Image 1 (cartoon, rainbow, N blue to C red):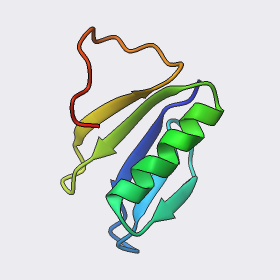
Image 2: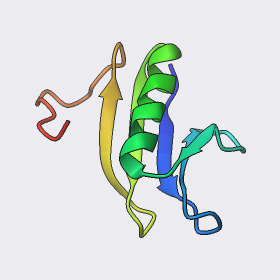
Image 3: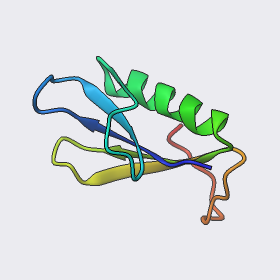
Length: 80
């Protein structure tokens, strides 16, 4: 299982995808939606986990569980 974070780079203006605990970017995309999709693919390929999406202020604004990860919330995600 692996968790990933999606956040905007101040240097390049692109949306970075970074594995939690990793030092380097795992990839980037021009849009947040595209970066989120890529991050979910990475997480799914590593056995599932969480993809955390950061807003422009750097704070986590959303988090999605990727199967077969364990969602601690019993409610269904209605955003995605």
